[in-house]
Length: 298
Length: 196
Image 1 (tube, rainbow over the protein chains, first blue to last red):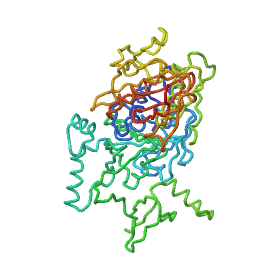
Image 2 (image 1 turned 90 degrees about the vertical axis):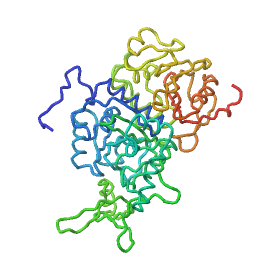
Image 3 (image 1 turned 135 degrees about the vertical axis):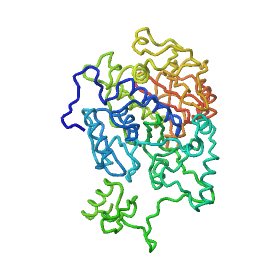
Image 4 (image 1 turned 90 degrees about the horizontal axis):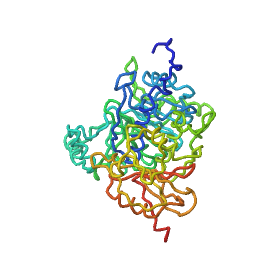
């Protein structure tokens, strides 16, 4: 981003939050319908943003339609606040939304835009989580035609998706969908919950906060309302498994930095080829470390 | 439940035109977002005319409105820019909740259930009157809502319209200063109210 760039705030056509008011109103209407029909991919226009589609434009449009002076925004990229996608999106909001605070602390944020992780700290009803989605439709792997997929979604017909999962078990003894695990919302629509790890699916279930998902390239908005069932698609005799962090001795690996045994871990291989494990959620890791330093129980 | 951070919808020098200010609409939208996320929670708008604020926040020339009970004047129509539409096809339907439910709004289609209308019902007062028991997404187990000035036929009609999820209508009840949402997923138990 050009550091010398200043906003044309004196021009009458300039809107708070970059998007014009008509675009925001359209996104807002779609958000409300998405909440009313949990898990349904509500279409919207998806405006051109000053960044490439696929860089979080869906999430960003949701954030810009929601945000106002007095909000505190946290932006996460794969759990961290300081990786490139998060830093750029945060700068963009700081530039276009005067009066908005940004924070790296989950507890302080009223709006959280995230790429591919749900924070470890349980969210509050006063918070809204916005997830960036690359591929919104879980049925795309079994049906190429969108109009047919829309009928299947409407009828709640996920038999072909279940067949795919069954074939995985027959062939590999394991369902091969690692992240973006198909999840049924409120007993009807199955969503692609964006590429969050399986570990995070349980955080969507009966969450106290609203989760909004935005796919900019595919022009879809969908929602998991608070206090709503979110169940991964499974078979009765094959239980759902999350990522396994046990070591060779059968112990749960701790984070190499804060020693937490509760969080989702990233595997890091250093220059010498040694493997390390560390919390993916950097704010959780920092807080856990600070609490450990002061001798408090986290 | 924790309170939403207070968003004031009165910009400096609030006038009758404040509903048309972008920052007011942002604040009203956040109240609407919370209302639809947590059905049955009454959200207070910092204004005297909740109906106009809601309409100004949600409507523009892209959508259609049916004003069944003629509650809008010509000036409001001009400012909203919304297309007039018959109630069967309108995206938004503005109604007087004290009158009986005699219309048939759009329910959407199986492929596009978002075509189900949003009904905006004016009621006398939220928070007093007939008690209703609500459950469904957005509600931890069960919650109570009191409404006065809502004709009981609306709840029966709503139940009929919403019987085949994902098709249905979404209700927004507004009084002078407050609003509450009843999305199509909310189950309303109204036999608790007995004779109305």
